[in-house]
Length: 294
Image (cartoon, rainbow, N blue to C red; front, side, top):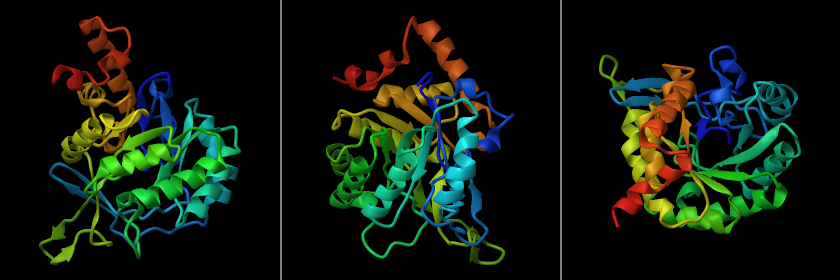
């Protein structure tokens, strides 16, 4: 990637929504809204609620479905000039495989992101994100279906994220995104009702950063594939923390709602910091915190 700054899935729509608002030359990759085989209406509103330290969302994977995505959204995203990573989600390993194959066949797709970690959809059994064997089954199926680079987006809502990360690596993941949102809730005290139509949602933004930073630190020590840190990245200093914890890139999400061109601001901040430190590549920061602690 030309920069280590990616635009996170779920915060940029299909990419075109930021046309004219973002300098895509500062963007390492756009990660599209998660796509499923059939169109989804998502959860009932309200779907967003602010918190003192971040944002709750309960979108529920609303999307146009794979056919319309391939016909309309993917070409428009590719025209923006940044590599396009397509996020996909299914209800079985076979569904993930079908989606990975369909999007992987398209030249506009630079990579595929497997979303096993959305907290806002109903699940009848133990969630995939908390089950190393289920994660491996999904990743292996997708791996067999496409030769495009495969990213797997993990959840912070698990007791043993490292075991899930290791399972994803063994099954063929090329990189991991660490991590998705944490379940959260707010209540409207005037009505006594949950603030979200889905009652609970996923917490993103500043409050999430220390949680996901610790996950990057832990997972980086146990896997050999690249990590993209995600959760609360709003400044160059935030990005540096993720790099120093062991990430190779970062995904910017909630910050885009305040500054759609946050990637440019962060990229410029990183360049100034590199000049100050006499560093030629951001890779020199990778894992610095681990090296300094030994």
